[in-house]
Length: 185
Image 1 (cartoon, rainbow, N blue to C red):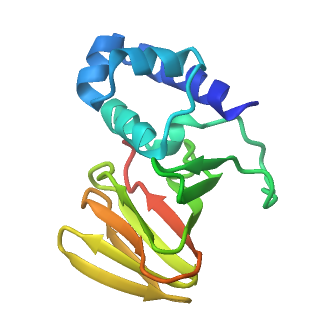
Image 2 (cartoon, rainbow, N blue to C red):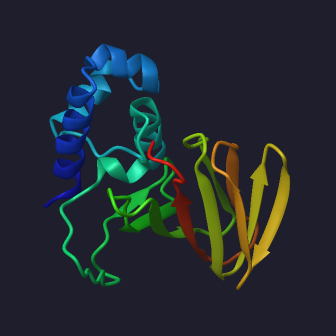
């Protein structure tokens, strides 16, 4: 199923399960009522940060908005995940595994173009973020300090801490991100 339709279906389902109006969710998420309505109708391709704000407003993991029914054993081929763009399109992520009732994490492959950055809004409280560098050098700026990661390095941080991914090099960088939810959100 097309990602926009999956997001539209899940957003409406999650919002109505919580008995929230579009206006209430707008106040909780910081996303306009018109934008939420457009997303619910499948008429918008929301950015990563927009989806994070909606997920935080609904108090669910990010990938709950992209959940599809999964089989017992699932192989995800490199060409299958839908690439999502950051606001400026120089940051791209692909979700390989989303959280489910039996899986309390999300696994993303991420790329950041040369000489660029992408600011990520803080995520759910109690959630943890794990980053593993595949290629290049990443500067991760956080409210609590800066961290440099190179190929093979890994880092974990509290997901509620605001952070910015920075590529100061002249080459594309690649990394994996796992968002772990220790309790049901």
